[in-house]
Each structure stands twice: as C-alpha cells, then as structure tokens.
Length: 107
Image (cartoon, rainbow, N blue to C red; front, side, top):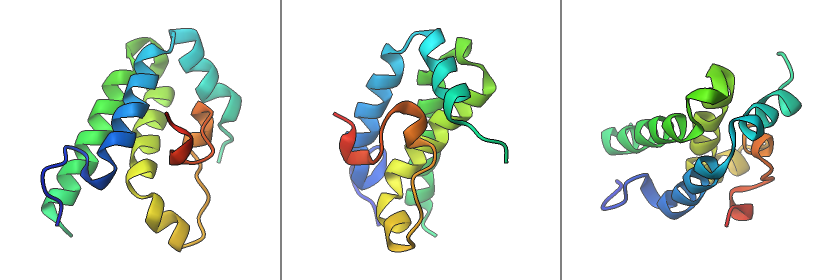
C-alpha cells in the first residue's frame, strides 16, 4: 500500500519528468512523438497511476497534440512501473521517446 507520496514510490522521478516536459517547446514535444513512434489492486496505487497520467498529460501542453500528450502519460506510468517492467523483461517504450532509456536517466 502506498502512503504519503503523490505518485507512489517513484514520486521524485515522476516529478522530475514533469519538470522536463514543462520545459519542452511545442516543437520539441512534436519531435519527441513523431521521431520515435512506430505504428503498430490497490485503489491508492490506481489513484497514483491516474494522477501521474493526468499530470504528464497536462505538462505535455496543448500544443503537443494528442499523440505526444498520450506518450507523456504512458511514459509517466512506465516510471511508476519500472520494477515490474524489468521483472517481466519488458523494454521501456515511451520513455525513449523523450530521450530517456530508463527512469534513472531523468535528473
């Protein structure tokens, strides 16, 4: 059970990512999306996931368009679920769209 952290145990990293997003220009946001995209339980934990998604969506900005804003939300959720992704051998997909190979690369 999560206690006292807005976005769960990875709050500091999610907040660093949100600061990064807010500093991007609309052109940088569009580039992050288009350059990398290829076609193709617990109530408190859910609330943190949902909050991170919403915050990343807002931080991406309205000029970014739906695709970049959605990617930002998914990237925030990858930060929150990094341990699970690693446990399952899943690569990060959305974080690299913003120039981060792993959550630890976000400063």
